[in-house]
Image (cartoon, rainbow, N blue to C red):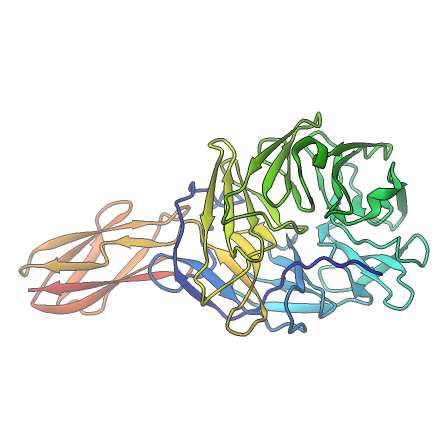
Length: 442
């Protein structure tokens, strides 16, 4: 019987709510430019954005494998809908159908700028590596024999050799950009249970999670891409990890593994150290669940019951827990630092029960104060603006007969009273985010 892992899905319709979390380090845009937040907010200082894309799928746990494409858009699998979806930072989507039944493999971008992911024939269980161009043309390459043991059921990742590496039930495999597949058997046949994620480590090796879940020990396996030679580390024995799946290459050069009640740091030499997760923010234990952030941080989606988005600050050894508004988003899962530098994740829309894509805006546009009272014509007040990565804003008065506004510094605006009455001052950035300030002149 085929084992499928439940990962996440998205949908598109924008909504937002106020931020509800501890503060996080400010970060630069992922490409060094002033791109944050790019995802459009809704309301003053809003941090949570919801997209409900109109894709083929209607159920939950079907969106998977968030990745930044060569075109700087976010791409992901629509497993239930048998498609791959391109999504812009403004929420526009285009879905491309794929020829085989999709697997929960995630997506990797190859050296040839094509997308690599897993598929299988639902009748024969023949596994495939599906390779898709940015225009949606897909070529399927069969893996091994027609059985349910040669399926790309784990993660995919580009290796240092320019090949795409993938995880299946009895092997770790690689595929060249020309379609040649090589398989490497696990050193122990019991490893096949629950094939997990794969990532390229800072040491030039590929790292894989396998097993756990009460069936077998949870392993992290180091694979030498030049030979396929494997070195196994039993995380159940080393740090009492009951089940591992997601893993990521951390900004500190170590591999980090999602073990539910803890996240585990594994050095290139295989030294494992567990860091217990907060009681209300256990890690979700699904492929693609973890992603590196800026400023020495790691992000993950909490277990389904927790409904949290969690940031771990490596240097401070501190967890920051973020809870989406209950009527907006639930069950954050697969995570990605998006092309805008914000945290993108799969989630569930609590109103429809469908999958959604959420974005946590790390440094939204904020203006202080939100209400300003001036006691007489000629009186002045100051509005202070903050927004990480952005240095240019515009300001407009709804009634210049009551109050005018003009820049007064790099991040401040001067409001001058003209006559008694009320008006609003709207502060906007170039991404159409805006904050409205109420002004009263006595």
